[in-house]
Image 1: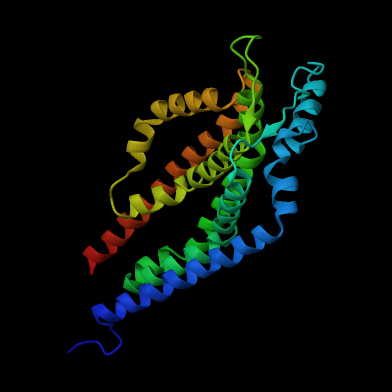
Image 2: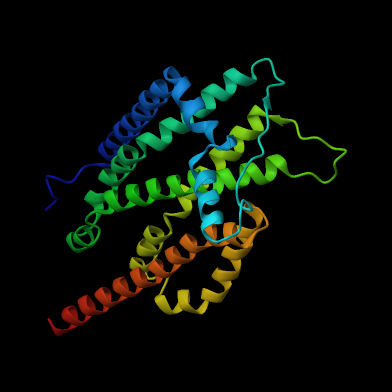
Amino acid sequence: MSNPNEMSFLEHLEELRWKIIRAFLAIIVCATAAFIFKGIVFDKIILAPKSPDFFTYRLLCKISRALGMDDSLCVTNTFDLQNISMSGQFTSHIVVSLVAGIVVSFPFVFYQIWSFVQPGLKEKEKRSATGVVFATSFLFALGILFGYYAIAPLSVQFLGNYQVSDLVANSITLNSFITTVTTTTLASGLVFQLPMAIFFLAKAGLVTPQTLKQYRKHAIVGVLILSAVITPPDITSQILVSLPLLILYEVSIHIARIVVKRSERSEAVRRRQ
């Protein structure tokens, strides 16, 4: 006998359509708010990392002085941005508003996705995935903050002031600056989803803690290379960026271990029955 609560294929499609519509509307609403309040979005957020008064630069300066390094880590250089396209500023306004809309509405968008997937899971899988929306949203927000306050400002200062010769001056375009800030910040938000990705891969049996431990040295080398590429050439900045990524990898190993142990216990109980 068929389950009266079970939906047909077309009903699933209709449900998915409404989930997508709700998620899209949430992004549009948040993006519209960001578009309207462009003074806050641009002056206080997007363009802030190019100022020497930015929070990260002031913190690095305090750390430098506390370690007896004088002002070696202090940021004093700045640069002007220019727009060379007729529609450049308007296009940048739209792009930044959309990015802000995605970032702000991410918890709601992910909730819509999860609420569509969850009914198809077994009761045991639902219980093990309790709190996944909160955990995913929290890690995304943490990654966004880390990208904005660590990776983006270090990248901006290093790339914006780097010169191959004193004969070549940097003329940074608005589009290039915004691309650097938004991509590094969003990429950081996605990288911080590593523990959640490992959780689901471990649940599917595709990843084990032994595999992650085996490739730990490769992961450390990869993180150090990534840190060296996106930060200025000093050891303090590289440690600042690489340490959270290494911690995330170790957390992922611990998560995989918990998932595997739970699966083994469940399998043992099932066999006794």
